[in-house]
Image 1 (tube, helix red, strand yellow):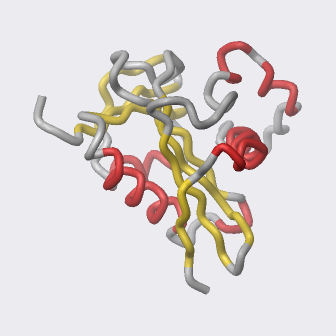
Image 2 (cartoon, one colour):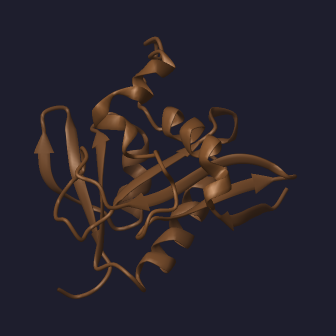
Length: 158
């Protein structure tokens, strides 16, 4: 079935919270954290009040069902590099992973972001399989942070 990529809007706020929860990496065999984690001060700002100036993102639908989303937001989060470089949040529902949905979302988001930003950053746990996607899309490690990496994709010449 074809993947439909649509812009995220302020009416997608509940979806954004759901995808943010899915974006929390849980190693195989580990128990997922309680959704209360989304209320923590270092996580809440990735999703609250979606639609602020600078926010951009997309959702992926298959047969009318939303199966993932990716967005950029100017925050000082885990993958912070500089104030004018937005951080990426991306997740695909587990039942739909490995089907090119993350690549489609990220490709569309990168194409759009290149008109507004010089780079995109992210934070990823080193053992997360998403590292393969990020590397394939051109992200480079700029800072190791213990068991995680801060990565950046340069979109424009500095």
